[in-house]
Length: 322
Image 1: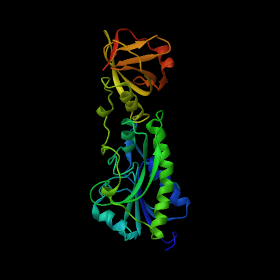
Image 2: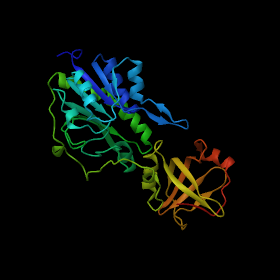
Image 3: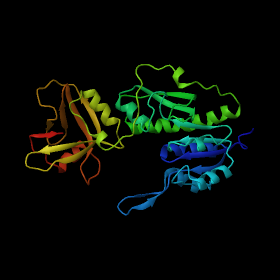
Image 4: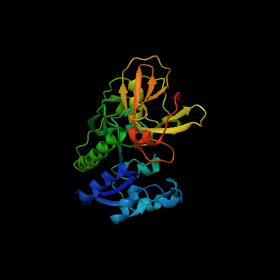
């Protein structure tokens, strides 16, 4: 079968999923339909917002479905009518068996980790939070249990100590598009040799990658310098690590922290103590040193470098973060 004859249905929602769809479309593959999440209200006006994948599909005239429920019979009829040979899933949602088992060549997923490591909703964040020096992308065939199917291909990607999750996300996104088309080619050429995940070589313990909530993003200043530093970059720029700034006689203020630096300096300050010269630096005491705050945001304000923030924000000492 030629790639022009292979009928592909593509499922995805966020920006991460657009690159793989773009590679398929521009590579001449036959994408007969796209499935994405329903529009969601966003912003102060609660105006309905299209997903990035929907935006791309509309711009390129691709047939589109946005089912509320994936087991809805009307949706399943529409999906069957597309007569897909293969389905591809990138950053979408858990599929019921009636959907993933539908096409004769199966359904494969692009996952942003080196499976079986970091199964779950937020693999890029957790890899950076945990201080990993390497991550990657994996294509695998879907089966009932989430992120457990047999691996088709993997690509390893280094993580620098200075990378935040945004940088790693973009790197994996670009490589992911290439891996998706390579995986389709392997399926077309019948050269796929899958490996069960339980047979994959894993160094160290297996880590999960659960969904991240607001409370997950609160900084624990009782942790060592390296762990706090990794935590901040693992949530930057989104969903962003935060803390509460407490000053005497004032209401607590939520600080979002986007960028920090490691300062291994001996001290005897209580954990969470905030130090500043009022002009160029803010730093927070942790057990084995300080975390220097380099880029942060006050409520209702834009993200600023620390020197910019200190020009218009007076910190009254003693101050601490919790």
